Length: 283
Ligand code: GUN
Image (cartoon, rainbow, N blue to C red):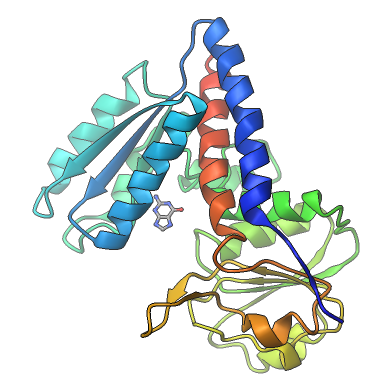
């Protein structure tokens, strides 16, 4: 079997068009959605991500401002900025680009962001809401994964899903969302005894481990749907996922490429969350 490709780039583009229309509608009611992105330091990859977020906002008519802070900023200066943004009525979403320098307290920073403006869905209140199945702002990459499954018309009910990776950003939240859609969910990680035997049972695989080409075709059940969240750069400069695309596509029924799969969905969902946070202010 050769898998069908899940074209995240196209799906994200369509979604951005829909968001653009809803932004226009909200503007008609006197509200322009606004996103503040905080970038600390000069990490080149983070700078690219932040620039892409800014560009995406402009395209759909969302107001955005970038706060580019020095690598040496203090915790209290960063907290003061978050406090100001929390009370700024023009700003509906606040995102602190991670990772932040080691001298800063990431947990305190995340918890300082108003849960209503937490467009990353990382605040414990939003994470808790996801855990108990209540509506809330949800993490962008996991939300993008579920959107892709919906787009290909995949019904998760009763299916076996295996998530590889247990981060707070992807692994844990995506597992909760799959569970919410009635899948039977297993979370695997670096201490899992026999990853291959777990994967061989999986109807759906979400790979979020951060290891280049880690999951090979022979580890997949024939016909599996494979979502590859990994973005790894090889020494030759090539961008690859956590799944070995060439061997996996011979076993899977559907698979996301890297780049052009899950990646574009993350930014589209950030726009969706910013729009949602702005809509929520209407009551
Ligand atoms: N760094 C890598 N991924 C993310 C993300 O989803 N949100 C934030 N804030 N930082 C990141």
